[in-house]
Length: 177
Image (spheres, rainbow, N blue to C red):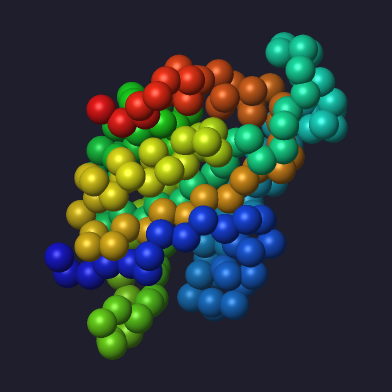
């Protein structure tokens, strides 16, 4: 393996991601893309506050019950293979691939710089451990990056859809094959 990542980290809030991204100037293009993506998602929102009951589901979204997990891959082929597998296994409802990010990191005492693809994976928070285990089992890096942040707010119908699509896995006792 050419290189790996820092150990898997589960962060407990959006502020932690924002802080960790902003203190690393090399990741500013990624932050810009994520902010544009979040603005686009918000502009598509229904307009009702996230804590209001969803007309489609009849129940309120429980903050933190859905997570956005981030995984970096060496290229688009690997990212697509992993993305398709996690959706097929219902470990995720949706995966967005963000191409051409640049990662600068320290690995084995040397500063490295690589072009990667960032995967943004939407899943139930309860599935993050199973998602992490699966990604680690198929990922080519020695240490795969898997970080997850709970979603506190958002378009309620979308968040309910994420839960609905992944529901059969979270209800079963085994999430992995």
